[in-house]
Image 1 (spheres, rainbow, N blue to C red):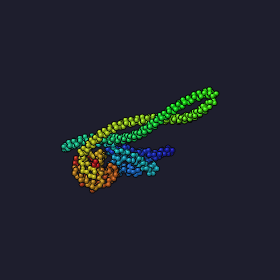
Image 2: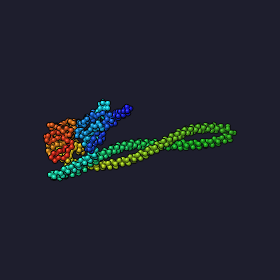
Image 3: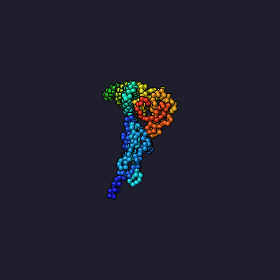
Image 4: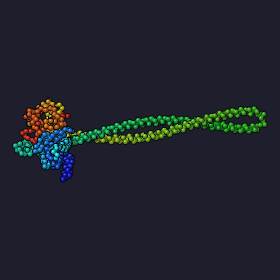
Length: 550
């Protein structure tokens, strides 16, 4: 028995330390204002004694307002006494049962973004060893802003529900038959106007498409600039190559003239060599004849001595002539060798120039092809730009139609104030029902927000404007202490209100009246009111939008 008890106690202690018996469940885990119908936070402790508790003293639910700071929402003590601290318009309930399961539950209807964040459940009691023990568990609720599509759809559903609700009220009240028909006509107009609100999505899509098209046009302009620079560079290269070709053509012309002159010189020298060869042949013949004469005249040497002397002189002269001709032929041979070298060099230069011209011709052909391709690309880009310009024109016209429809519906549904410091105030004419979330969404749809009064001259201007419409007993503006009682913040950005003009004994609504209004019976001073109400013919209420003047 002792070992069984020790093992059972060890298992219970392990389960106690790991918190397997305590749970904190949130439903749903993500909220969307105006869409989510309720938020439930449930802290439970199953099988209290099996979880390591001898008795449970209290269950407490907290919400994080900063990373390490929590505020108490509500708590449940033994005897099932519930203390509601900061639950606001939420409902707290629970039960402590030391023989079974215990729980603490808080539920809010139509939660807003302020209710998202981390929640902590804390259970305090006595352990089996009669020591105080505490268990905690956490859960997180995320929140997301409504998209324009969801917002437009919710507004449409709200307006339809308002119309149905108003029609039911009018049917039950036969005494207000005339008002029923007027309200019915107005609601039909509202339904027609709400159908145009879907065009807000078109406006956003058109704006995104225009941004994308502008980026494409910018990219295309950059490509065209780059292509223009490339074409300029290619034109400069072609100009340089043309100049080089012109210079090479001039050099080739000069070399051709030199070759022609050298050819003429070689022809003249060839003729001279031919003439000299003929002279040498004639002289050889003469020498042969003279030798024969000398042989025949050997016997006549004495008588012919003078002739021989003369002939010797002639031969000496001829020898000198032959030496001179030999020197001329040597000089001509050297000139011909030099000319041959020059012609070889010129031939090599011409071959190199021909190769350069061939390469330049290929480059010019490639550049011409590139220019043709770039011209085709520019033509295609010009066509795309023309098409995009037409699309932008069409989109601009559609946007203008949407803006005109919004402006017309604004004039039909609201009373408009004069301009005050660059903005106007719009007072809703008639409501079947009201919630701060739907009112803020409607103001946002028209480009504004629930009126945020932050200085004295603005407050006096609004009071004077509201005094013209005394059929409304209260007009809701931006302001709520729904999260923390007494801490009034703007609904749009959750910043603290800096200007408040309360009526005497206000605020007096406690955790039930969490929204800020300006009331007729308070001489248009501020008071706390409910964040949701339905149509009341005798006590009509409205809300005030603040929209910047474009």
